[in-house]
Length: 110
Length: 139
Ligand code: FES
Image 1 (cartoon, helix red, strand yellow):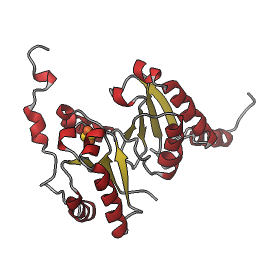
Image 2 (tube, each protein chain N blue to C red):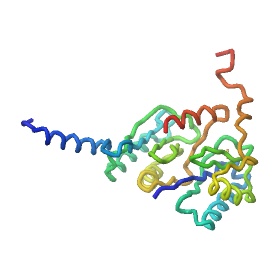
Image 3 (tube, rainbow over the protein chains, first blue to last red):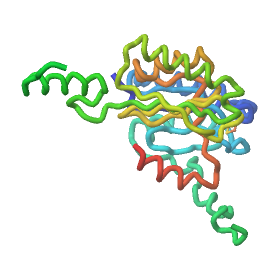
Image 4 (tube, rainbow over the protein chains, first blue to last red):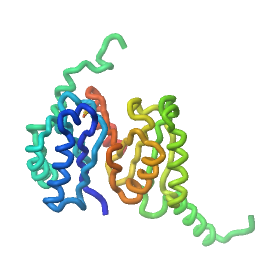
């Protein structure tokens, strides 16, 4: 038996303040309601470094990061991403944003 | 060592291979890497390493390679342990004391489930892309 997907819900202090606990419980509830508990594991994780955009949820092995996830989004994330394999772009962390930051190798200094 | 015929030699090779976890079925080696930079050691990484070692021995897990490395950069979550099990996403655990270390062996390695509340899969924002690329390569 092995899980096919893992839902990591941030349990760091920043996300906790943004009510990640409810999101964590909500995911467990939804996974059980859909009887997916033998293929999907929900775990609490440490800070992902996106605290100001919390609660943060990461789904493995797809390596997708969802930000600002609320209890109302859980059903959609499970049915679309986990069951359907379609990413919920509305909540996806926009990786292009990170490219706006200057990377160390881009600095003349180095 | 006395004389050995070819068949005995082959059998011996197979046996040793199995002991090393390299037997038929190929790539089933599991890697457990403990981040033992100075802050890791200060936070008790040696105890973590020793616990992992004895748990692996206790469960006779010969296909697991336990290694130590330098700092993983998770100084807020020392000591860190990276676990790579074939067929599972590679996971970095943080704040791994002796209790969590034995959970890693029993749950993650033996039962293939993640240990709750200790996954520290953090990647700094500006290296997210690069890390993902190298992550998939490693897998
Ligand atoms: S506390 Fe959740 S990302 Fe930092």
